[in-house]
Length: 300
Image (cartoon, rainbow, N blue to C red; front, side, top):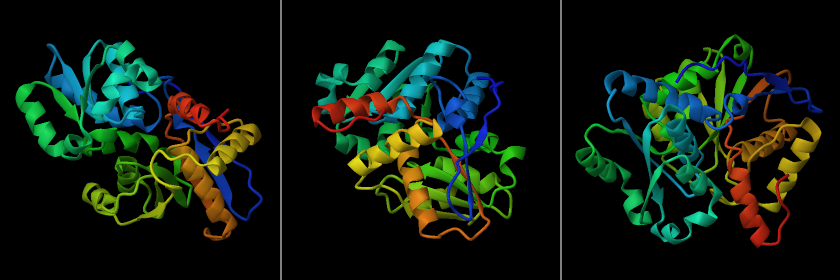
């Protein structure tokens, strides 16, 4: 992988408030390996390929609609690497062809292995078994979160991000929040918007960063993967007003929560807030299929 040549724009989101809100469009970094996934994979893949030139194999983990699975499969196709995805939920094996994310991953050449949710909960043990079976493989954790990922997230910070008081990111496995925390300016605060119900996230992030400049706030809005009518309205209004698409699992929920916090005067007057758009727009198609089955409004 090479560093992208495109300049990632930082755009202002006009708000009727005494604070200034901006978004860094990391979703534009690559059409298929988008947002923070590009940077989480950057050093993982490059460091591995420096050591392993023959028959490389990338193994990773994810749910049925995982942005990470989608990105790793696209990377495998682009760089002619074998990839294998360990997918949560063995019941999905019989109906994966109805899932646009998994169909896309399979089309990219990814081998899909479905495991029970109980097996998946014990990913550390599963990783040990896989490493014994495939000793030459690179096994990347769920969401791509590890020390190499943090070095990649560091690349999301540059001269364009230095003048902000708050850096905001959605949090699934915690890697992006940890990377921003570790490498941001000393005066900056990181707010992680939790889209999962995981009480251990604070501890996990603390293990990855040496700083305590981050704060986690709940943005699950009913639970991971749950899409409320209110969130659909917010996402559609946001796109209509600012011409920026959001997906309903990560960035869409973060931005809804950010607007709530602004309206509640959480941020001091004059604050400059930067939200990172971490991509994942591929998930909209799958979300709309589920919404359509429920006869609900769709995400535009």
